[in-house]
Structure formats: structure tokens, C-alpha cells
Length: 326
Ligand SMILES: Cc1cc2nc3c(=O)[nH]c(=O)nc-3n(C[C@H](O)[C@H](O)[C@H](O)COP(=O)(O)OP(=O)(O)OC[C@H]3O[C@@H](n4cnc5c(N)ncnc54)[C@H](O)[C@@H]3O)c2cc1C
Ligand code: SF4
Image (cartoon, rainbow, N blue to C red; front, side, top):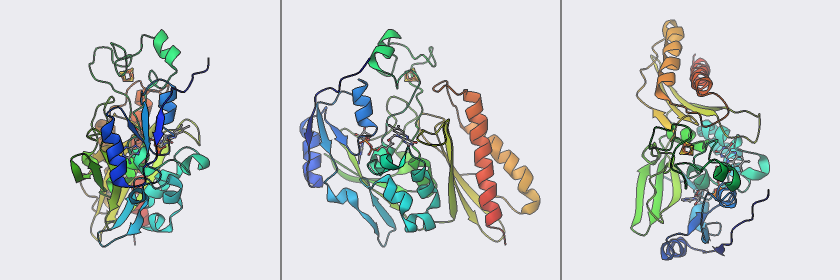
């Protein structure tokens, strides 16, 4: 059964002020970037947006430049440009690796950084056609009364599956947001909510303008577990930053795909020296297992996702540590 695309009007503002004005004059309007998440969800009847405000022609969102504060990436920068950037590859490798794993090549040439961060959460009972969801009485997140994943709960447990957020979080990224109340800065780690129905803290009609990455404190890497080797969301994704000093190595880890928001582990104990390594990475794996709470939101068992995200985190951390040894 085919689903017809609902009617909508499309505006193409050419300045940030005009984009914000267009969004604020119609409360039910939505920002449109590459459309690879939003248009799919509109077609499935998951989003009603009679007016779309395209951000594609807003120059402020296209910035990709080094400033005295660090690297500024506009929210409208394409994932392909991030993946291909020699600068990102050298200084923020986890980010380039994460961007490279999103969907397929042509997709990454329209999908943007801002859209990736603000993508909707995902669930087996939600990312379905209208008729499928209707025949299952919909669900708590949209139009229904109960959550099919956790029927006794009152909160949607859909999983946040963005690949870029953890890679940016280990590098302590900061957002610039703009909306009707003005401009503000927010650490990316504070941008998300553990709520599958409202996974971020954007205020109404607010948008991400850019992301700031300060000078890197170490070497990073990103890894992802997915059902297919390409064009697939992460069942679990892991970004690791290793700050290798003479005496000890400090790790920062961020996880995606397991909860309704990405999880940042930035208070891990340091690893002292080679004699401690095996025990350290075993303990790290257990810490990651305890930090995540995957639900029955995919066809892959939650317990498998818990074990595999922990194994992947320990493997990436060990790999970075070994590379940093004299
Ligand atoms: C087949 C397929 C495979 C995919 N695989 C992956 C994957 O492996 N990993 C992954 O992370 N994602 C994946 N995606 C999801 C999606 O394509 C990407 O997350 C993409 O980066 C979204 O960017 P976009 O520019 O297309 O966003 P859009 O679809 O245009 O927007 C997505 C959401 O973000 C909002 N938004 C966009 N820009 C801004 C802004 N500047 N400020 C505030 N809100 C904004 C929109 O209003 C909308 O709510 C996949 C999608 C498909 C269809
Ligand atoms: S977790 Fe529950 S409420 Fe959320 S989308 Fe899935 S079934 Fe719906």
C-alpha cells in the first residue's frame, strides 16, 4: 500500500533572520535541511508540517572554518564534506569516521550536521507505515495510549540513533542556537533529553546555527554496530577519545543507539600503565554495560546490544591506547 506525501508549502529564506521569522510566524512549521529524516517521517504520517522552512540557502549555516576559538561547522554542512575533510580527519577523526558511516554516499551529499543531531528517535513500532501503526492501535509516542516496548511505562523509550552526536560529544562540542528569544550557546552534552518523544532541548522555533570544536585534547575513533554493513542506523555506536600522557591515559566515551539520548562517560578513571591494561579494559567494558539501557526497539535483542556496545567501547579504547604507547 503506497502512502501519499501530504501537502505542504516550502519557503526558501536567504538569511538567518528571515529563516527565524518564517519559523516563528507559523508555530507548526518545521525547519528542513536535507530532508532525509523529516520527509520520510512526513510521508509515514509521523510528522504534520504544513509549512517547511528550508535552511539550504542560509549562508551562516554553511560555515566550515577555523577561528581563534576552534573549528566552526555550520549546521547546514553536508555529512560528505565532514567525512572528506582532511582537517576533520586529522584533528577530530571520530567525527569523520562517524559521518562516513551514515547511510550511503549520495545520502551524505544532502544530509546535514544539524539534521543529524536533531533527527527523530527510532523504534520498531514507530518507524512504520500509517496503516501498520493503526492496525496496532498506534503507540504512546504518537496517537496511541500505550508503549508496546514498555507497556507499564509512561515514557517513550525510542532510541536516539544519530551517529555524529557521540563523536562531537567526546570532543566537547558546543552549539550555537538561534530562535525568537535570541542566540545562546549550549554544550552538546546538555542538548539531549532521555525521552524518546522529545529527545532534544530545542525551544519552539529554535534552530542550530553551528557547532564549535575546540583544539582536540587527544586522539579519537568511532565504531558502530549495525545489521547491514552499509546504509543502516547504529544498533549501537561508540566514540572514544584517548588523552595519552606519559604516566596515564584518560578516556572519554560517548554512546549512541542504546538509549533515548546519547550517553557521555567523562569521569572514567585513568589507566596508569601497561600492567593495569587488561583489568582496566575489562572494568571499562562492565562500566559501559551498566551505563546503557537498550530496549526492545529493534529486532536485535536488547541484551546483545548491551554486550556489543561494551565490547566495542573496550576494543576502541584499547586500540587508541596501544597506538599512543611509545
Ligand atoms: C535509509 C536511511 C539511512 C539512514 N542512516 C543513518 C545512519 O546510519 N546514521 C544516522 O545518524 N542517520 C541516518 N539516517 C537519518 C538521517 O538521514 C540523517 O540523520 C541525516 O543526517 C539527517 O539530516 P538531514 O539534513 O537530512 O535532516 P532533515 O531530515 O532535514 O531534518 C531532520 C530533523 O532535524 C531538524 N533540523 C534540521 N536542521 C536543523 C537545524 N539546523 N536546527 C534545528 N533543527 C534542524 C528538522 O526540522 C527535522 O526535525 C538515515 C536515514 C535514511 C532514510
Ligand atoms: S518506545 Fe514505545 S512509545 Fe516509544 S515509539 Fe516505541 S512503542 Fe512507541
